[in-house]
Image (cartoon, rainbow, N blue to C red; front, side, top):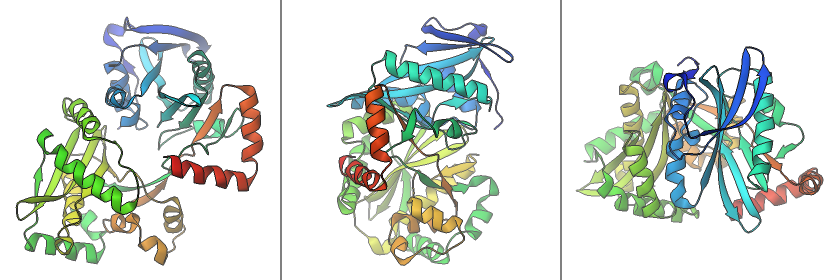
Amino acid sequence: MTNKSVALSQGQVPSHYVAVEAREMQGGVVTAWLSVQLADNGWDGFLESTRQGQFQQTSLWARAKVAEGWQPIRVVMTRDGKVIGGYQVMAKGTRFGSIGYISKGPVLDLDRQDLAGFMLDTLIATAKTHHLRAVIVQPPDEDGCQQALLRGPPFFPNCLTQVIDATLVVDLSAGMEKIREGMRRTTILELKRAQKRGVTIREGAEQDLEAFFRMMVATCDRQQTRPSPGSVEILREIWKTFHAEQRIRLSLAECEGEAVAGAICLTFGNRVTFWKKGWSGAYRERHPNQLVMFDAIEWSQQRGYKRFDCLAMSRDTAETLLRGEPPTEEQKKRRDFFLLGYGGAPVLLPEARVYFSNGAARFLYRRAVSSSRVRAMLRRAARRLN
């Protein structure tokens, strides 16, 4: 999908856009607007037109996350009536004050240093205007120039919260034959056994969300983590929001008429994200999880999507594979090894950075994270809190 500017309706700025700042730049005046409505089709259309656009920046995601207490702050940049960039901050109150999180943003239509600089200046002003104590920023997976700008003050390495920093992506454009060639032999054998042993796949609907959520909770219990989203009610809100736009799919693996495993995929642009999965723990010998995963990949490829994003993998496993080394015995015990059975390539994601609105907080945090020992302590604390 090629980058292109998205024209707003009749070249006019929507009435719910409030001007924040304008700056003369090469090619004309760029204006930053605050988008004050929850839904923003113009912004979502821009995101879908660029490779940098991901579902985490959409107003769809904002509408879904409101149910969890998050509030969006969206800044859209235009030139000549066309959206050329912007970002969506998801803000939430904590005992330390309001914290903002920009996941997969800011997003730029043009990979230009001057526009990126204006974007970050506006971001800092947004944090101050909306009284955000801190903003955690992780650029899009395919970021062009923002990573370099975020590496120095006033942005610092993020040790406040866990942020996914690696993933595994299957290239769907290669076709199913090529994908099968890249799969692990044992995975192919397990898929054949699943089919022979009567495991079937069906698409789920809203009434299946409770069953899926129970399987998701069972999986989290085995992995000693907390489910996210934390309730079936919130999961249902996300389903309703994305289902209205036909951007979500629930698939269930059944054995003997019982749903035992499932997955939820989100679609946006040319990417399918393997967002959530669940397994009751039953019928291990029939390999229902393997069939769920393969079905999701095959479904995505047959519908013309180009990338199947597994959403997360361990950073050290990704780095090991990118060095051309085989995974260690410890790495083979992780979820990553299951995902690697379907081929795909590890991808290191941009580093998340944090900005503090208060100068004293910036100074203290900078001093703290200059110590590798303190950084390690903060990251351990973040793992416990998330």
